[in-house]
Length: 320
Image (cartoon, rainbow, N blue to C red; front, top):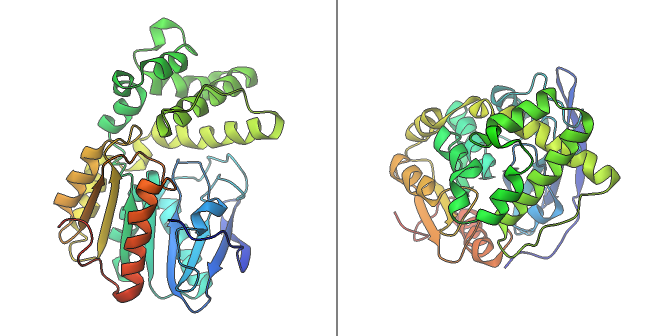
């Protein structure tokens, strides 16, 4: 269901201040419908697969790595790195590229960032395509770090065994403690275990993997350093702020996609968001998990993007 792989036609670096320089790229048509992709994590970065969500004959797709992520520098940097900074970075990037309004596409953490950005700069947002909704509240964090063990007990146990038994009652706090106080070996071991746990939740068929080698392990450490920096602080938002942002966006064309079998972010989040954001459309996908590139989720995402390119709306897509 995805489009064939393509190369970016443009890429560059944007100095956003505070010592941070963002990597960005553009793919598709320079005169296409402008759309910006907000990756998840926090901490993950964009990949060539993200380009394949967009019809290259119709879209000008803008991808960038958020502060501390991917090819942006400093990788793993958490100073001067908050949601408010990311919202300001989005505006700097939009202005740098000379785009008046764009479609904002965000998945997982990117869905929360998209809502926060759109509420702050509604006049710059033509529409929203959101996937795998993450509300950033305590219930979401408890789900990922504790309650999902009801569905994936073996994966949760392997992850929890990184910590002494007395620390396992709050794995979020335990992770934050290791990143703040642990030595390099402890941090690397935790990052590798966290990555394996997350991969298992993304795809329950995944078998436990080996520790990433060399540079890959260093990148994994940096990814989770950014992630724990955000998660320990409710992503500088929290559930009330995210749903409050959504309530202010009534009338903005919005498509919401969420897999009913998502083990990373609760399907309940998407249902609550659709009831809060007036006029939004929701597709809860049977057999869909958290992976945007799996056929079950890629198909409705690509279809929503097609509809928006046709007329700037999502009429007839999903459920109202």
